[in-house]
View 1 (cartoon, rainbow, N blue to C red):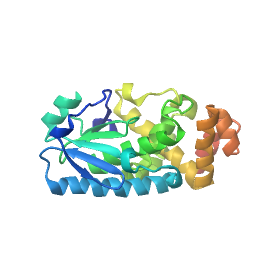
View 2 (view 1 turned 180 degrees about the horizontal axis):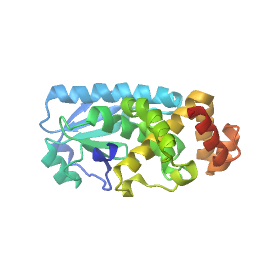
View 3 (view 1 turned 120 degrees about the vertical axis):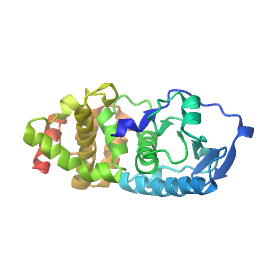
View 4 (view 1 turned 135 degrees about the vertical axis):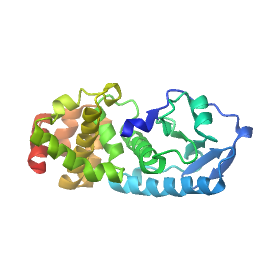
Amino acid sequence: MLSLFIFLCSFSLIAAQDKWNISKGTHFIVYFKNAPESFIQKVIDNAENYYNEIADNLGFRRYNFWLWDNRARIYIYDDAQDYCANTGQPSWSGGCANIKDKIIHTFPFAKGFFETVLPHEMGHIIFREFVGFDNNAIPLWLDEGAASYQQDLRNSTADKIVKDAIKKGEFIGLDSLSNINPHTITDTNKVNLFYAESVSMVDFLIKKFGQDSFIYFCQQLRDKKDFSKALASAYPFKDIQELNESWLHYLK
């Protein structure tokens, strides 16, 4: 489950640079102490690949440029104990991020890091960098959907989970979905359904109407700060209810 691996860092890390070794990629700077060089290179390679894939998936390639001093930072602690002690994260966490500052933290061979944490957190950063980090018009399902859209496993199984929920009468409509915070829910099935519906909706918007419409929708959200107006400007829906009905029709 996603929440077992990802936890947002609520702190701002101030690192003494002389305590860290540094390895640089085109869009990333990796800070590490004693992590194996092979792992550091794998981090850089995967991060660079995801940078290109996520930009392509969302259609944001020509809007995001992490170069030189604007590169994202990844801190690699020596092990899980070192990571938890310095970030304050629980023992089950495999990585965390400070989205606004473009900083990701992990440790060597953390479970799910390359498959889950890295693409998800990079998805959050790239999406939020485009629509605005403090934009209250962005519903949490859209933020999480855009981030989860980058995870192959979650993306490939999302529609099946949603369709099963529809058959069982457990489907959560967009009105209700917009009021859910998965980080405060203890029901694992409901959390998984929240993420599945979120990524399914983003997938629907992009595949059904194209990347250009999704980009324009995000631009409108960024500029108008109003979800309904942005939706009506980019898609043939006057409100979230019409979007919900069209999405259900598409799934069925």
